Length: 186
Image (cartoon, rainbow, N blue to C red; front, side, top):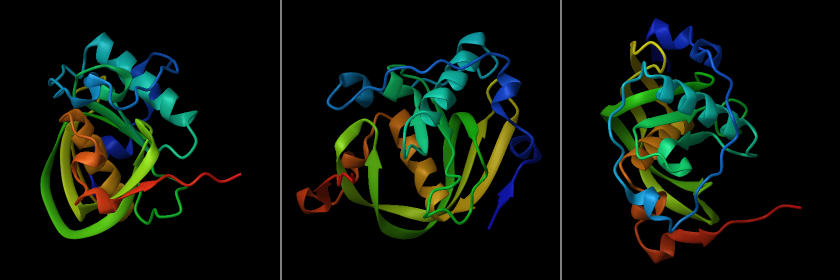
């Protein structure tokens, strides 16, 4: 299942026109993680730089499939996603960044395990839609995007939209019984 506007299919971070810098990622309980992000002007130089920084930081972080502006201390609605290569990925649209994204349709709700760079020691079972439609804007151009996806990419999008709303996956778990110590592999 994959429906996406042509603009997202043609987008790459080179369109931002600036190199990304790896930036520090905040950990809970940092108060910046619970602030609701403000809408942004996707054409601004600051948003283009932030988008490039999110992609650069995501790329050097093992296992990372998404990173939102609040996780790097910016209370705005911008996030990067790339589920390419993750074993749970069926549908994927490569690397992309969205501004001012909104979940406009959500169906087929299922529980699933989630982790987060901002909650490095825990995972949790969260019920999310396994089929979603998300609308947002591309950084740099402001072009509107409508993305229909499913499975793991749908979960990643909802997780990042939650970050922009000041929520962590821990805010979505059913209770303490659904939170687990993260496994470490040697």
